[in-house]
Structure formats: structure tokens, C-alpha cells
Image (cartoon, rainbow, N blue to C red):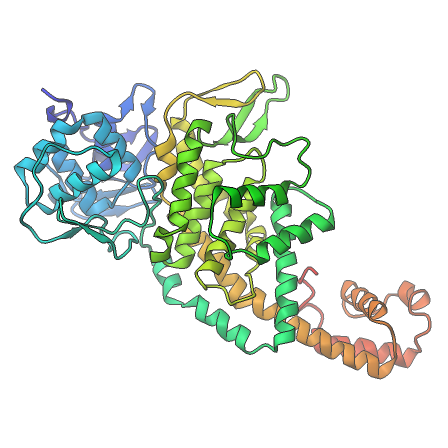
Length: 526
């Protein structure tokens, strides 16, 4: 008797693999499948989904961040088919769990599901997903009847228009390929963001700015984003490296992604190659610290095994060259950029290139106005705690299923096959976070910078009508006023601007106050 035929699904419990339920309930769907087929005495062998399902004793649903409890009338048959159908119907697709499940149960049990219901919508979806994920062909004849069904339920998760698979009579609307296919759930926040049409708002802001002013705005925003990206990594590089990386961001979207392009970006980011081996990692990679006494690694996140890097990088490149074009641009950017940083393909430079990829997708899709790149890194820096939480939202579920050991170089060596966990992660929190950052750059940062430059130009004209001075001196004057809430300090009056009369000082300070007030633009870091 096959493993899938045995009735060994969990009954009512209060704790599921260290995750507490809101009340005593029986795990169903993915939770039941993981517990029955993908768990050992040490715990699950796959990252747990963000939210699991169970059947409670009440006749109403209970929703928490980690659980959704259904009433008893939703209880599925205690079979592989029953729990698979429940998962597809109510929980959406978790491709990492599905692939590992298919490999665990083998083809015979899946063939039995298809043969029992050859025209069933869920049976055909299971059939398609088995062959798409595993690359193996089941011993069942091609479907001849039944209306085409969607592989991914667009009411639950974001998909594409897709293409028909006549063998299964399934329309493949998955947003990626078997090599790289993160997914995003529809949430109230995602729906609200997509309905805002932020790209059009950005174009409206840009259309109202004079061309020369817009060019100066774009140049500053590039520099601001480059500097912020280094600060996020805890680095303070020389100004020339900041400017060089800013120029690279300015070219984002012009060249399609390739391994050579990623290597070019890494060379720009690293600068000094003496202590970092460029190219794809040949050893393990992790984010975290080392024990102060033993120097053993203490990872917060572990990247993919070096031997899996070529296929995953190829998957991301394929996503960039086709699959992401059929998705909302910000959603696609979140999938690609956060997928890259989780995979962690390089020894160094992963974080900055990860944020570059956001610019790359937005620019290539025409989401950001031509010549303007939103200062996404600056917005991330302002929300750094949320950014870390978003990164950890998957890393903390991924880390427990990675088997690793410390190497003699105090690095990590991954011992189990983990590649699927990087191909198929849930990018919903990442998409929500990125959309919030993009919204901030469009609704606040971009118009504020344009307004600042307009005010600064007017300030320049007013000052020049009072006293003639070189541009460098005027910039210095503005800096003193900004640092002292619009007033020249006694020191500045006695030294740098001792030549000012009292009346000139009063008029200059009044001009500054009228244009900038005492705080409206003080927070802008120039």
C-alpha cells in the first residue's frame, strides 16, 4: 500500500510543529500534507507557508497571521486527493511544497487521482503541476474533454494571461518558469496599491516640471539612492564610488539581464577586488555574524548551494526576459529583486544589486518616467526596520529546513537540497513593502525634490538681488541657513559673512523663511 493511501493525516491538535493554533483544530490542506509526507522527527522538510489551514469546532472562520480555521463543513476527505483539492481551492499554490510532495509520493498516486477523475478541474491542475514542476510525464492519456481551467487561481494569487496546455486542458497562467517562479497573493493592500495607478501619478508630477529642473532633480535622486544603498549595507564609500554606482542606476533597464550584466554590476559595486572573489560563489554564503570566541558562523540567512546557482540565475534571467513582462511592474520587481537577495549569488554586493534590480524592472517596463529613477533605496532606508522584517519573513521560515555545517573557513556548507525553496518563495510581504516605498517616492520624494529646487532657484534670485556672490559662496550661505533654522549664526556673521550689513542679513534670512519656513525642507538630505 502506497504512502498516499494510508489514512495518517493529523487529527485535532493545539500545536503544529512549534506553531500554536488559535484553538484545538485538525490541520488540513498544506498543513496536513506537510505533516503526513514532508516531516521527520526533527520537523518539516519544507518552509511552512505563512498561513496554514485547519478545521475548527466552530461554525465560523477564525483568521490570524499564521492560521485560518474553517468550520467543519469544509473538512476534506482524509486522502491525498482530498487535501490537495482543499489546498488548491482555498490556499492557492505553494509550489515548493507541491514539488516536494510530488517527489515524495511518486507518480503512481498522482496517476490514480487523474485516472479517477480525468475531467476533474482539480485533478487536471494537479496533473499539470506535477509534470510542470518535476519535468516527468505521467502514464496517463492526454485529456480530451473538459473546459480549460487555470493552473493558478487569479482570485487568490497574481498570475498572467498564460498559454494553453492541451495535454491537460489547463491554461498555464503561472508568472514564471519551473526554474524561478515566486508567487504573490492578492491582499487588500496589494489591490489598493495596484488601483492607485502610481506610474501615471509620477508622469503627471514630471510633466509639470521644466525640463532643466527635472534633469537636476533626476541627478540628485540618483545620487541620493546610490548613497542610501551603501548606507543600508553599513558602508561609507568614497564619493567617486557613490557617483559611479549612481551612474549605473541611471542606466538601469537599458540592458536585459544576463550573467555578464550581473558580473559587470558586481565589479562596479565592489570597486576594490583584492579581498573579494568576483563572480558566482564557489562556497557557501550566509548573512549573519560569527561567534566571538569560536568564530563559527551564526547565520540569519543562508543562500543557495553554489552548485545550484547556475540554474537559479538562469531562472531569474528567463523571468526578466519574458515572464515578468506579463505582471504588474512593482510586483515583478519585488519577485525578481528579493529572489536575487535570497539566492545570494555573490560573495559581496548582493544587497546593492538586489536594489538595483528594482530600478531595472521599473525602468524597463516604463513604470518610472524616462530619465527619472525613484529613490527606492532612500525610502527603504527610512523604513529599515520594516525592510529587515520583510527579509526575515521568509528567512526565519527557511533557515530551520536548511541542514548545514561550519567549514574550516568559518563559512557554511549546505548539506541538503534547498534550491526549490529559493525558486518558489511567497513574495507577498515583499510586494506590499516595495509598493509602499514606490508610493512614497512618487507622492512625496519626487515632488518634494522638484519643489525644493524651484524654491532654491527663487532663493538664488532673491539673494543676488540683495548682494552679488559666486555660486559656491551662495551654496555655503544656504547651508549655514539650513543648519540654523533659517538664521545666520553669530560665528557665520563674524567670519564667512562678516561683509554683510545688518539689513542684508535680515533680508536674506527673510527670503529663506518665506521660501523654506523652519522645517518644510530641512529634512531633505542633500
